[in-house]
Image (cartoon, rainbow, N blue to C red; front, side):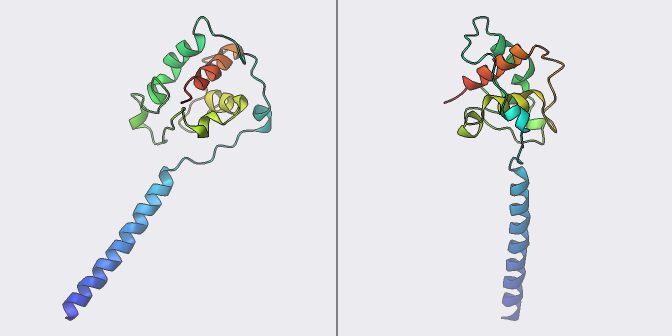
Length: 139
């Protein structure tokens, strides 16, 4: 009887400790808040409503973004599995509900594993066309 009680206590303690570690690891996978400076939140998209006849936004996406974010922005690019940062699906309401200035900031200023693209995509108009392309990923 004592052995059974010891076993039960040991089992319960192991489950509690294991559950705690599991819970902690799951919370570290959640995307951390990404505050956007007011300057960017109030930015106006100079290419809003512009038809990208030459597919500049899509082409720049393919060149600079697709390897991590995937063809359709689902976070399934070839490099995504090697990143510590959890990729988010650009079709989700969490992304699409952000204003253009917020998407611009996160796409071009970056943070952590998301590199800064201001020197790679130098024309501001082209950056806005990438933001417009991100808008096409909406479900």
